[in-house]
Length: 395
Image 1 (tube, rainbow, N blue to C red):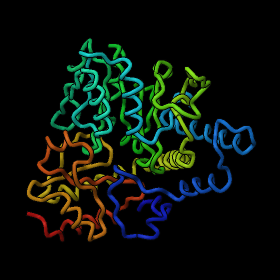
Image 2: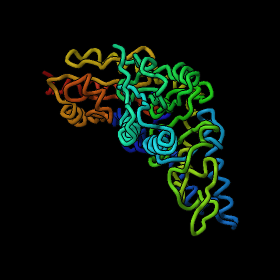
Image 3: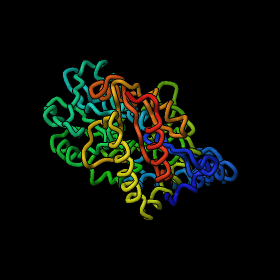
Image 4: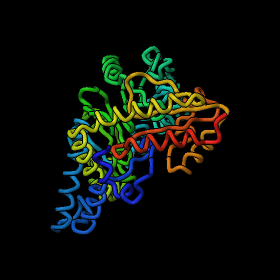
């Protein structure tokens, strides 16, 4: 039984709901909702620009939230930019980190298992500059295969996921990032899936940048964190310009703040930052109380249930993975199966999961994905097993 389920008001209202779409967005615990409301009720004011007490206090709160979120990935607050999420983080890096360095004839490397957010920004800049966009293939177990073989003297940047949002496979990013550092190649890590399930230390990983989203680790939507190594950040031009990040503005030219504030144009998502910082604390407390072991045990039960369904095949996965598994059958469209399960109170994600190059290679029409969260319990697994038995769509 999940000791955390009662901390989510949505499951107190819908106790029999089996929610298996945490890889897309986690449900939000009460403590995060309360932190958002508390800020709005008592502390709201614009930050970094007001000389009155409420603004100064709001600024101090905002920077304390930054420090908490930065510490969550082993970083310091002067290397953590608040963004709208992993998608905006990757676009920011593509424009401010990659574009100024990339030249015609250079190349950028990603893997076949990337989410579109870690594919499209790099692909677009390569197309516009005339650089080559290279894609590393996968081994039979879903782990990255020939990535380092694609790296050469014209490689400018490599970006890969820490864990696949479709396969759940954990990639050896620390090993790869250290090899890239030795060759003078920039490394970017998409930690959108791993941040909720693994302790992350950017210093141990050795990456130049790492991005994650709040809504995938029990925080609100529209907020995320982007770590950038200090010396790399210092060389990056602003992504957007406007209030908050500007130093001096004259009729003919302007100067901008250095560091993380130079990448947060306009009024920041203050309620989002309040929620994300609280979500980080909630998740750290859960880990200290055995959540990782709990989810590993529950995931084994989920795998056993799906393995017992003869007409469904699991997509390839290695031994090391986050609690995400995807299944398919070419004779059964995953959306029809998702609709069938939904009638039994089981919510799972069907489709290509913003990873079309991967799912097109492994399936004919996409797959059905199941992903666990802290609120998941054995009753959810039993409800899924019952729904699969009763489903009339099986071939």
